Image (cartoon, rainbow, N blue to C red; front, side):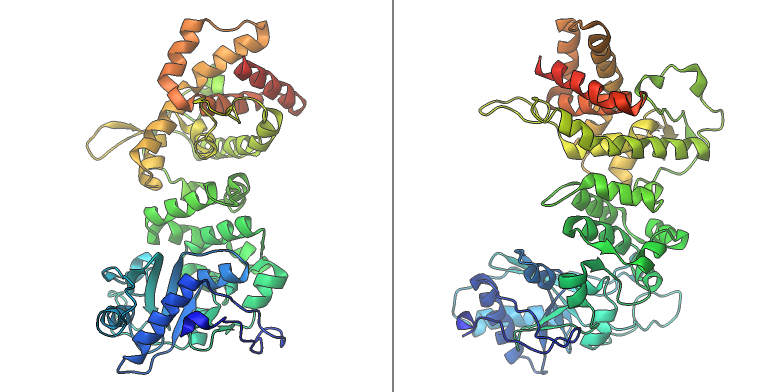
Length: 476
């Protein structure tokens, strides 16, 4: 039984010539492996079962993982998933439970190249695919593969996004396989995100990989390889990301940068800006747009920022993105100054609201564009900011509402605190009470959004003082 095996068999490493690192699955993972091997035994075709990608990477880094990508060399994912159902029903009497088999069809035009079968065994989610090779199409107008072509492990490894994700775990031999001969070194020694093939080839195959590279690099504190850095600014890749990849996938990758363990949203967004991708990730609706770009909180009535008859120019939009980038860079400074105030840390046993860093980053990205509007398909005037959150990123309606609310009221919040700053006069209780009632738990995030944009109007030396005053205001 696999439950008694510790899978730490050493094999020659293809990358260094030294012994390969070992993986020690949990008891639950071993139980799943036993099911996979049992299903393989009742197959009419000999089949080798490998786990690929993220699970292998995370286990080698000593991190837990609750999902597996399973690759087959002679069966499709759906065929093998059905074998698992048959095995658990007719052969295995352990009482293990599996879910129904789901099938996600291939869609190469949207960078979904393989049909994938999905299943859950106990608490582990599994995706099943056959090893990938170059697809064969009947013609260029039909992007659905004409037949299923099974690849080799080496072919599949080179079609993956990064060398650190191209590693396989052979369930039969309990060994790690590094077919690119770079994956183990890049993961465990070089700490680098590198593509198995030329970066432009890999990124064009699935442009979302560029966002994934940023997320991995930031979370794991890895560097991007020099050739990948060069490809990251490619207009062709950016255009493919905009046209080939669903907005849901883009939003999901951004969410992974903004939240979760080891997330560093400021650094991730800075990389997006440095690659010139901000207008791709936060894509605007089709022109024409109306309104103007506002670069400061108190610019709403400024005479030097008059509305352009033909909508905002590309230069003004560029300046708006530039201001967003500067604002995001100040979040860490703000946190360091007021980290002991209620703005950041609520007292124990209190319902006091705390700052939502995810919303703060989204608001700072889009605040300069809060006056821009467009005409939707129903001929109604709509907010560009709400379009970006709801349509470009496909976030929930509550996110659209919260970002719109914070951005709409940040000017009023800034004026209240500015009076406190200049005159040391606490605002009228009714005035601030009405504002807080509208914002509810969003008021700390609205306050932080306001103070950061206000600080951009002052000399850098004054930032600390402005942040200190805001912290005092919050505590009072």
